[in-house]
Structures are given as structure tokens and as C-alpha cells.
Image (tube, rainbow, N blue to C red; front, side, top):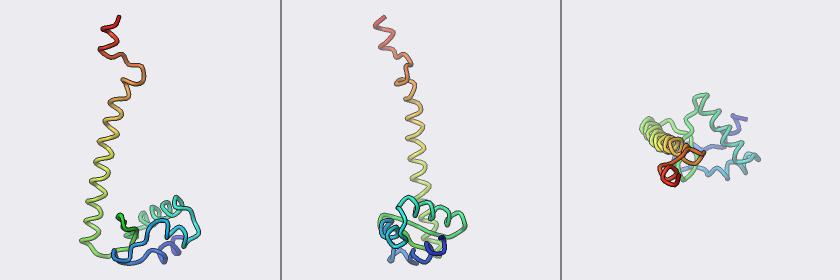
Length: 103
């Protein structure tokens, strides 16, 4: 299936295809196509993506820019996760200062 995926994903950012278009072309669900893309990336295929869709690249500048973008996204998400974890104690029954004041 990865070979079909690689054939379906165009080369070059200017030719990017949206996930829904790839899913329709491959007769698979969007989730399945995302899984296939992750697998192909693990195998070393430089499948990049942005708001315009997915494409295969051999351009080092483009690949480095993609890595930077993914790093920024993961850093932002990790910060949100840390904040949520820090806040979980107050919504899972941990007493707050207001609870002590009302006793």
C-alpha cells in the first residue's frame, strides 16, 4: 500500500494534494491515509505537508523548514499539555483556598 501512497502523493510543494483527495484516490479513509503517511515517513520518505496538502520533497531547505514547523507545533502542544496537567488537580477534587475559607 505504501507504494500506491507514494505514487499518489505528488512531488513538489506546488503540486500538494489535500488529505481528502488522497483518501478518495486511494479508496481509504482519511485516518488510514494519515497512518500510511506516518509509516512512509518512518521508512524515510520525505512526505511534507502544510495547509495546501501533502507532497514529496527532495529539497533540503524545504525539509528543514518543515522540521522547524513541526518542532514549533510540538513545543506549543507540549506546553498546553503541561498546563492542563498542572490544572487537573483543581478539578479532580483538590481543595482550593476558597474551600478552606468556607469551612
